[in-house]
Length: 343
Image 1 (tube, one colour):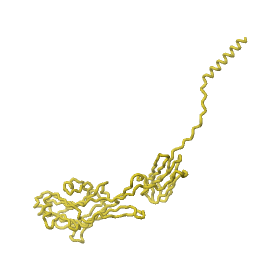
Image 2 (cartoon, one colour):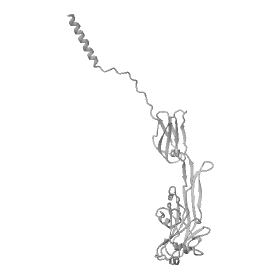
Image 3 (spheres, one colour):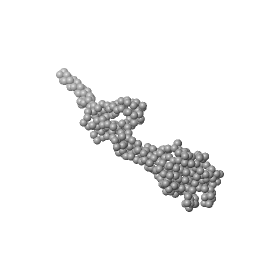
Image 4 (cartoon, helix red, strand yellow):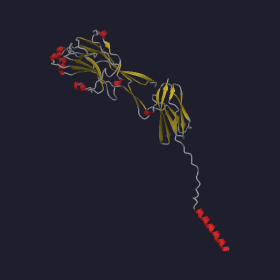
């Protein structure tokens, strides 16, 4: 009996031990997740304001070493913080006066501009260049009407035409007066005169006090450096052999005369339309180098307490690319906002 009881107790012990062997392993103590700092960020609730409004930029996330602010205003744009800001003439105004006499053939004179003429003085290069005129720009130069009265008081002003948009990056601009005579069209050739040519550029840059001001430069104010270019060299030969050529630039450069008589065309044995061009020297825009743009304000330096926000007031309407630049150690980051400021 005693042995039976001992056997039963041993069996129970074994069963309990077997049951415990199936339990999961006890878990090790774990610490709660440590809080990870969020990355620094700048936020703006709206991007449209009025002049004089206080614009608040909210900061969030971890502290950074320093923060700078570019307002997007002139001389304070981040895009020019690494590359020199070079400004070019904001206008290039050309003007002259015209009149005509003799003959009756219409539409002999036209004015064009080109950025790919090479300035060689050869008609072949003139013919292959791309010339733009009244079909390409509005407004364009006004020429004397066909029935205009001859005489100094009746010279017709072309208007002050700003050719700034005709320029291409890195290229000069040429102004060309094209005179065309067609011996097959009724009406004798006309004598066209162009007077008082002026080319004036304007550029804005700081004066001696650092205030922005407009400065003008007269590039040319006469025709002395114009080139007379003939399609037909026979006409050139005729003119150069005359004591008072039909086509000429006066010694003072005060005017250029474009004209070929019917007799000259006949003597030169020309039966097709022919052209004479008076082309200006190369016109170039002026440049001014402002250097690098600077931040509008340093929001935080490395030793400053981290601010919660930054406030700014725009005093002029416009569209601004606002930039915040911050550094965290060696890492630099930039965030831009497109802000519109209305009147």
